[in-house]
Amino acid sequence: MNVRTRAGLAVIALAGVTVACENTREGLEKDAKANAPKVERAAEQTAATTREVAREVSKAAAPAVAAIREGTAAAAQVAKARMSEAGRAADAARQTAQIKAELMADASIDSTTIDVDTRADTQTVVLKGHVRSAAEKASAERIAAAKAPGFKVDNQLEVRR
Image (cartoon, rainbow, N blue to C red; front, side):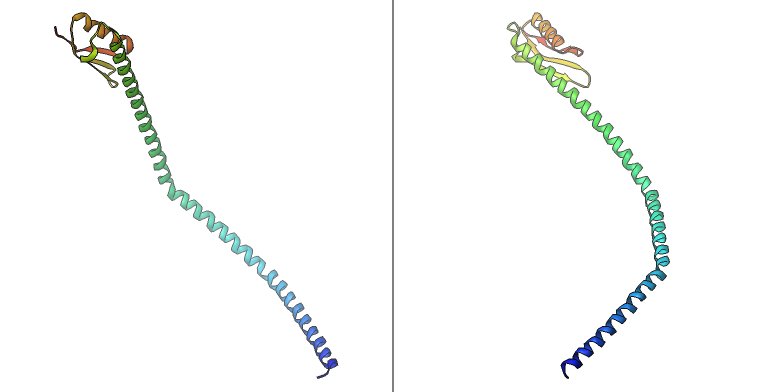
C-alpha cells in the first residue's frame, strides 16, 4: 500500500470515528434527559426513607436516652453526697489535728495519754485516755471546744493520780 492510499484510509477512519463519537454523545445526552426524572424520584424516595429511618431510630433510642439521663443525674447526686462526706471527713481530720497540736502545746496538760477522735457524721469530738487532774480534764475539753467550733465535745478522759 502506498502513502496516498494509507493517508486516504486514515482520513476515512477518522471521519468514521468522528461520526461515531457524535452519535455516542447525542445518545448519552438523550439517555441523560430520559433518566433524569427517574434519578430525581429515586433521590426523593431515598431521602424520605432516610427521614423515616431517622424517626424510628430516634423513637427507639428515646428510652435509652432517658435512662442515661436518669443514670447521670443519679450518679451526680451520689458524687455530690460523697464529696460532701469527704469534705466533712477532711474537716473532722483537720479538727483532730488542731486539737491534738493545741493539747501538745499546752505545758499544763500531759497530752501523751490523750486520744482525740473527731466524728464528722455526728459533729462530735471524743477525748479518751487519762489525765493527772480534773483541771487537766477541763483544760483539754476547753481546748477541744475552742478548736472545733460547732462540734460537741464528749469528754471521756479519766483522772488518774
